[in-house]
Image (cartoon, rainbow, N blue to C red; front, side):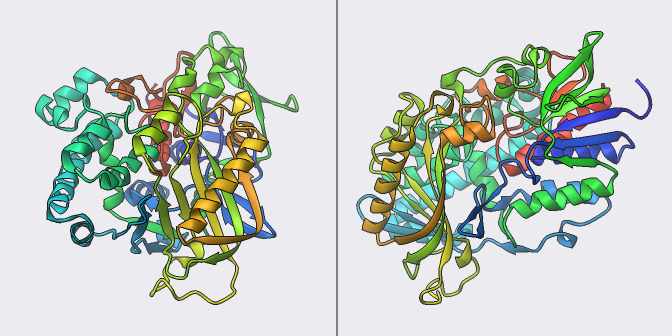
Length: 493
């Protein structure tokens, strides 16, 4: 290959942006092709009654991943974005009407749990925190920062004892039962598996490291988390990346048994020495980027897909004066909820409901809300990833919305919707074709999931993968890290 390679990057999500920046700063000719009109992928905004509302992830965690990307390009994250520490408690409302306002800080959270459920549960939380910290510390350098994890290498690097202590052969649900006798607290911390679209009844206890990542600190991005994608796109362009929006790739071209270029839907061809695809491997396997790319990855079985969601981006009036920016209304039975989603492929009878109210960020006291002022809201429930089968259909989605907002009202969260934008598995499948609407790539099921997740290298020479569906996993920071790992694999080929 020539010293300067021509590299095509498909998709300006976190993985694609990180890969493009890494490759361009090494002097390569990089073109970044994004089908949408804005960068960001699943970091997106929707217009609701003329108001832009964030319709994806809300808070930034593992900030150091992004600090490193910006610094590698000779700049600082703070030069591009204004960040506010995430300090408000998250409100948890349970089916019995009880409420836990869970602070971000460890000592404050432990005290709150003690007041809520007693001293034994506070001690259980302290032990859980320690176990989650140990899991993150063990796996951060040995697994999450490596391009091609292997069981034997991981055991050698981390030590068998430390690795077993992360709980790879225990489910997260069972591990939480070792720390919390109160089923309500088990529901609270089982949500960490939901962050990567997986049932805690199937996920290994190793996923408790997500709780530690969250406890390390979070930040709100002024203007919404999609601004992070825009800032990274600006950095990419400053490094010489040619960003083309509204450019949909139809096919990865092959010559001589390796990648030779890309063909767009308008039949324009772009010669490439290598390609980084920031797309779900399921989309590749389904032939969304041509026959050659479809043979480069393994297909994702229906039961191995991560969760989808139904979201309501709302502009309206929220009658809940003391509600913080984040709130979770838990379902009646956590195990039954996840069983319906993961095993039966249907909506649970009583799903957990997440409410994010960005206009309440930084309000102290929380109840300091201007009377009569309309607010932006994002309401979400998990849903089975069957959008490619037309499920749930429009009628079922509408019925779900009626039930969700009725339950919120019963819990004292009354939402007067003036305008809304609803997105379900069918719409997510349209946004991210070939996935069924799954939002997090393959689900993390069982101990072997870590080693069966797609890695950067594919069976097709010159084709690399990045994104939340690729190792090291879902989430904004991990998706970005996957892009850096993909670029490093390409450069080392």
